[in-house]
Length: 322
Image (cartoon, rainbow, N blue to C red):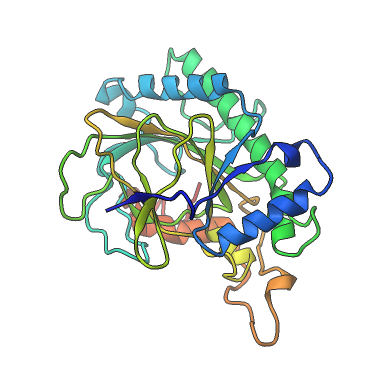
C-alpha cells in the first residue's frame, strides 16, 4: 500500500540556484544531501523547462505508441538499446529488493544523443513532428541536467566543477514508456518491476496519471508528490559509484492502476560512457576504502543489460551497452 510522500520527498525550488543567486548552490546542495541520505528522490520546481516542450514530447510519445505493431517492430532495438522495446523485452533480474520473474508490463522507445553530426536513433518514417519534439525535449533536458551537476558536487564536499571533465559527451537517454492498465494485482507483475537506475541522476516529468512508487529503507512504498510542471529527480548507480555508496540509489517501481494507458519520459544522465569512474576522494579513507573498482558506465551497463534484456544474451550483442 503506497502513500504520498509529503515529508519524505521534498519539493525544491531550483530557480534561485539556476539564476546564480548568492548562497543558492550551497543551500541546494544541503537539500540534496539530506534527501540522498534518505529516499534519494526529490521534486524540483521552477526549473526553467517550458511546459510546451514537455507537452509536445508527451503528445508525440502517445502518438508513437498508437502505431501498428509491425511498424514499431521495424524499429526494434538491437546492438544498441536504441529504438523500440516491445512487451516482453525486459525482465528486471538485477533488483536488490524483489525477485522479478515476469517481464515489465509496458513497451518503450529509446532515444540517445540526437546531435546533427551524429544521430544513431531509429526514427519512425513520416513522423517529423515526433522526431522534432523528442530532439527538443532531449536537448533541453541534457542542458538542465548539466546545470544541476554543481549541486551534487557540493553535496559530496567537492569543488563545484568537479564533474565537468567526466560529463563531456555525457551518456544520455530518453526512454518513452507506455504502461498498460493494471486494474488488479497479479503476482510479480509490474509496469516496471522494482529496480534502481544505472544513471548518475534521472529526471522524470510529472505524468498525468500516478504510478511511480519509491521504496523507503523500512520497506514501505510511497509516491512522490505529483505536481504538474515539476520533475521528479532521483539518484542512480553511477552516483553511488562516485560516492562510494554514501548516496545509494533507491529502488522504485511502476504500477498503472488507471483504466487507461500511462505515459512516462524519464531522462537518464551519466558521465561519458567510456570515462573510467572512481570513488571521489571525499568519500574514501583508511576506514572507508573504495567499494568499487574503477569502471566506466559502458562496462557497468553491459553487465547489467545482459541480465535484464533477452536480446543482450545473444553473442553479437552481449558486449554492447547504450
